[in-house]
Image (cartoon, rainbow, N blue to C red; front, side, top):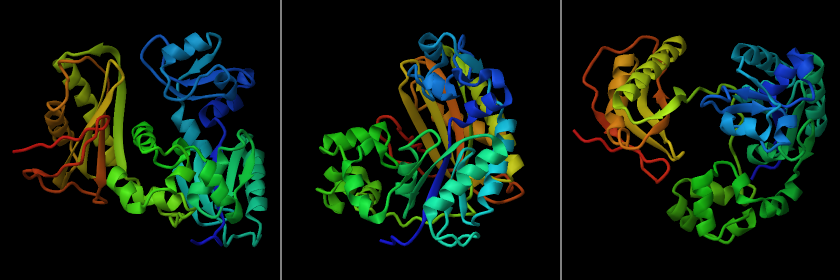
Amino acid sequence: MNDNRKIIHIDMDAFFASVEQLDNPDLRKKPVIVGGNPRRRGVVAACSYEARHYGIHSAMPCAKAVKLCPQAFFLRPNMNRYKEISRKIITIFHDYTDLVEPLSLDEAFLDVTKNKKNIISATWLAEMIRQHVYQETGLTASAGVSYNKFLAKVASDLNKPNGISVITPKQAQPFIAKLPIGKFFGVGKVTEKKMFQLGVHTGGDLLKYKKSILINHLGKAGSCFYDIARGIDNRQVQNNRKRKSLGAETTLQYDTSCIDKIKAILNQLAAKVEKSLLIKKHGGSTVTLKVRYSDFTTVTRSITLRCPIYRKTDILHQTTRLLQTTDAGIIKIRLLGITISKLTDNEKPAPRQLNLPFTSLNSHPNEAQAILRR
């Protein structure tokens, strides 16, 4: 375990909503929800802390959010504006270190073990960065400081909004032992349920299990959880982090089981993905179809091809095949999505050729993967 590193995780506070409040002073100190139309099928992309007081959170249906807070201000996302502010923030980070790894528009890891200010204290640096961001943008940020990425990210969430938290190497083990398993990196609802079945509710409970047992129950992730429970996370801050996937999804205005309508929507999504691949000069070998049924059960179906694909026609061909392995046409659907992963860096599409399945991914109840046979 390398406990000499100094890692900072910066997380902007309610970023999308805060930008809207910054640009429109009339919205300050008021419940702001950025997302879809509450009269339709949209979901909450972000919300201000004033809105969170009413129990509203991201990914919540906007129809539910408006019931919890009828007086809330609903705004459509202004991604160009958010990206503009995000670029300014990333530039500020680079004033302190070249080892900056953005995770999204509103958060990033910084390795300040060696930094441009020659300041020994990572806590002092984190405070300087937060103040710098506020001075340049008018937005607040929370920071977590520790010796690895996992603990720094967890720490940034401990004193929100506009706060800073530090987890030293000496504090790490007792802190992790009490940490709820749902707070661990990579633990979603499915994994959390598996953990509970093992009797694992905290980091301390993880310490009771051998690595082989965790791997047996949780797959490769079991090895990661074994290490993290012991304060070990050797992942480096990568300043050349490459995009791993491109995709598009949409929530339908009305639930439908009509195959023709579903295929028409997939056609639109495939066109969007093709455009993204063209702009980024990528192709991709793995195609994933996401389907959310009317009861909110979500499944994915994936296939990995021998050669990357680039065109809408190829993307649509594969997703249509994947659609056949779902309950589309039987159970009504409320959301569809297409993602292309295992991206290439090729600037020009490869010659057209027969693309047969190469491998398929494992499945589990909420994220089933398709095994397509010739």
